[in-house]
Length: 440
Image (spheres, rainbow, N blue to C red):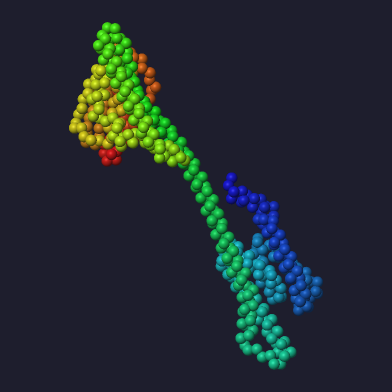
């Protein structure tokens, strides 16, 4: 729960415990004003009773009842102002009129009602003031024969007295009401901003978790592509080395040299990938260390640096599988041209992983690798026949992530990936990659 929400709940509880008052001191203030107003009206009721030929207790009681109406000024400000206007001819309720006009102007009552009631109060006070001043002037004229006021004296003084009683509370009430509405608007805006910040923080955390998961998946895919093929060939050559070590020493030496070359190539690719990962993480912000890296930061950096594999290295890749004893046929259709580095690396990895799967699951099978250069796309297909039962199985472990990794690579570039068994008992892997401006 926010601090503002707690304050609102506390205010609501206070309002329920103190009728319409939000705070205890508001109730105390209104109660004190009502007592003062009742005493004022009670004293003024004495003069009203004498002028109206009523018993004094009746005038005092009437003044006490009228003055106590100020207690409900927050709940019914219009009622308070109407009562003050009604008792203006009796020359009582001045405090009630001032406080009532202030409360009315500061409340949420429509401005047209406020203007109308303020005008009625002004007219009533002006009329009563004019009548009282004329009486006083007439009395002064009788007592002092030399006092001869001009015709503008009574209206002007009455106007000044009326504006002095009515204008300040109305203007001050309008100011307080506008300030209160501004503060409420700022408070609501702050609450809304706090909620938006909370939502943004939650979304940022979700994006960070998503980015971390995607980064783990991408790193696992990179490690699988780099290690699986080289190590699979090393295992195949090691098995062949074990088989011919005693029968054909020269071939054993050749296989041992191939194993060493494969190991060095695997280490070189691992160093390149780890170096790229380290360089990409150095400038990443500390709050979300992986979110800025993105879905394929290391792969993109590897593509930008030009250190990754390309389609020109397919012949070497196929030759490595041939040296391991696999019968591989490479067919290239169309005219090769320069593609985006990421496209070439993805195409290379797809062929590489497909050949690795043949080493793992179809020992001795014949493989056909087809590469087609088209106008707006490049297509590759790796198809192997059934496994040769006479061939020795290298018993290579499989985690089942090869096809998943190939599909992720291809679909990330907007391509199409299809894999499945063939009617002849083999397996086929096909991929089509767009090479338009969007990918480049």
